Length: 354
Image (cartoon, rainbow, N blue to C red; front, side):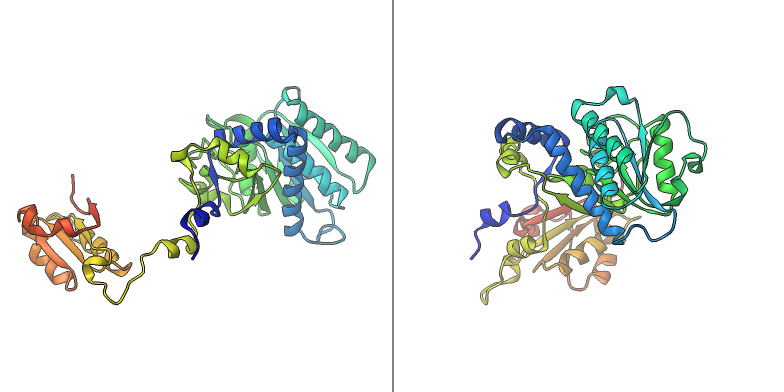
């Protein structure tokens, strides 16, 4: 039989942005993999996803069409510069739009930016790079952008803490208004990597290629509505690096159906309703009789062997008519006599009102 710890360890790791940054640092210092190489690997993974979506061996499907890549000036933009170079070298015409001051790039990002520009100047198909500054009244104002068959979003990474404004916010609007599919690097631009909250404005991606491990913001809040299909790209971040940045209380993993099935208690021939997940629901009021009914019914449907619903005495008759398979008990009965102590899980709140 599979060991619980072994199965838990096999679940996809979920990191906060600060944990991911720390794992990058550990990898660079201990494994001898520098930031330039990590960025190269991340950008290549991004390009591979883009190529799988526009999988035309001899270029793009429509004459004059191309891939548009939007890059910021941080590390996320560096991933985009690598992806743009790899796509151009693979036969795809690419338009790159840089948002932000190129003088503020990190050394690694600047190096990949220079490599991309060299590839564009010396190779085919013809590709170009344009710096965007100022407001955009219409997305059609971006040269070549309307003909995009695919958009790569590498504007802003997981380190965002404040609302997106100005040119970046306008560019995000332009991306979202376009009909082409969108691939985001690491996280859709404008989405908090910690909370999944939209910070001012956020890209709605069809695909997200997240680097090294899942980010918490992709899975909670509005993250799932913006991230599309998530691909975890292994870029050289070791399991040791990831484990070293997670505290014992913060080993967050993504639940899978297989793990949920493993955790579900097995029912034996000797099992009774009291040994098969007895549950209690405490709720309801004269104005809200439906909420406890829905909650108690759901508890029974997911497998609780015995469900007891505690409610105000004035709605006891109503609930007994609706919950014919569930024990309804007015909460005026002393707790010692109510049977509440049998419950392994108690839900308090549905329909209680304010």
